[in-house]
Amino acid sequence: MQKAIADVFTWPSEAPQLIGSRCDDCGATTFPAEERCPRCGTATMTELLLPRRGTLVSFTTQGFPPIVPYAGDATGERFEPFGVGLVQLDDVVRVEARLTESDPAKLDFGMEVELQVVPFYTDEAGDEILTFAFAPVTDGAPSN
Amino acid sequence: MTEVAIIGVGLHPFGRFGDKTAFQMGAEAVDLALADAGITWPDVHFAFGGSWEVAQTDPLTGLLGLTGIPFMNVFNACATAASAIQQTANAIRAGVGDVGVAVGLDKHPRGSFKVDPTLVNMPMWYAENGQYVTTKFFGMKINRYCHDHGISQRTLAEVAAKNYRNGALNPKAFRRKPVPTEDILASPMLNYPLTGAMFCAPDEGAAAVVMCRADIAHRYTDTPVFVRASQIRTRNYGAYEVNTSWAAVEEDVSPTVYASRAAYEQAGIAPSDVDVVQLQDTDSGAEVIHMAENGFCADGEQEKLVADGATEIGGPLPINTDGGLIANGEPIGASGLRQMHELVLQLRGQAGDRQVPGNPKVGYAQVYGAPGTAAVTILSR
Image (cartoon, rainbow over all chains, first blue to last red; front, side, top):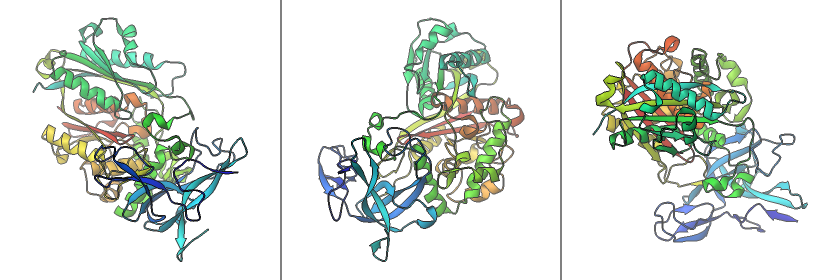
């Protein structure tokens, strides 16, 4: 069966959203949800579903296997480089996330991206683990 | 306020040293610093030590002499050594003792090892998802910086090439061979636009300094170097830094900018007064960004400064004259003390083949690391 890597996005869902939090006092917004506000230090955070679309503030590629506990192939034999981006979701918050596109020539600053839930790896029990990633948007629809 | 002088520096080479322990390297670095100051271990009133890998550094006393002195451990990731320097200077000002030692030592394992993101208050999924990788933060930061300020990937390679060239002049460096710019550009892409040869590597080494009250420095040396400023800052809300899954929409500047401003103010020194500079070059892009964050140029001016050779040893703004992290690697506990060793040699005119010409008077050092901690130290003759 399919499982989410962590309880940080709505799933199953036709239109998945990241689960963040917002401070009732000062409006600071985080991802993932936090108990205490990183700006004013108070424990007044309320869960907030984040916008699905945003723009690429910056990006890079992960060209080598991250070390354990990376859950993908850390041995390097089947490792596929992946993109990583900092995505601004409207005027709400910026989140750091994997990108579905790993070719820097196909990524650009300010590019519109949309959240997708994508297959990541298969665990020892045979379950397919899903993670979240942002995909470039072309002509108003996700590109893949 | 009591002024503080550096009267001795010691550096165990950085690199790979087989079975030699971090403590053995640390003891040798202290021996060298004591000899440089013309004193022996029983003359030392207190010490601060820092390391990532060993549980605590004060077992060094078992190698140096069990004299019973206060020996405190500090840890502040890449700012560990800078923290030991600050604490040692402040302890002299506070009257803990007249003569103190700051020492850093590390021996990082080769290759990959397991990491636990919860130890830095990040969730386990952050690492499982492949995001607990410090180098990708640097890739993301310099990629945006290059786009915003017109810095080319070739300039990133030129900066690395300069640091390898400087390392070749430094008998204690890890990497002692010049690397051609084209080879740096052609090495495997780790985190776009940064290639493997643009990054430093974890390794082994140790460094130490001896400090004393400035008014007694003449007892030990004719060439004291004074600690004019030492400032440490963490991230402000709005800064996007290492090991984070989010950032505020309203951007704030890096903690380096705050540490730098505070250090200039404490020292009463302006960037134009600085003669020799050590910057955190975890990667060559970080050196480029840190040039501006520390006030040495405006954003984007690096492209021309590097092309003109301004940051070379003989240029008007010599940076990482001993090869920096790129040529020396980063034994975390020792790295900021290596910077002090280099600045003191430069200010004394003892840096040999890599001596900055013109009798430099003011030295500047900056470190930066996870999770957004920066330190700046300013020295002068």
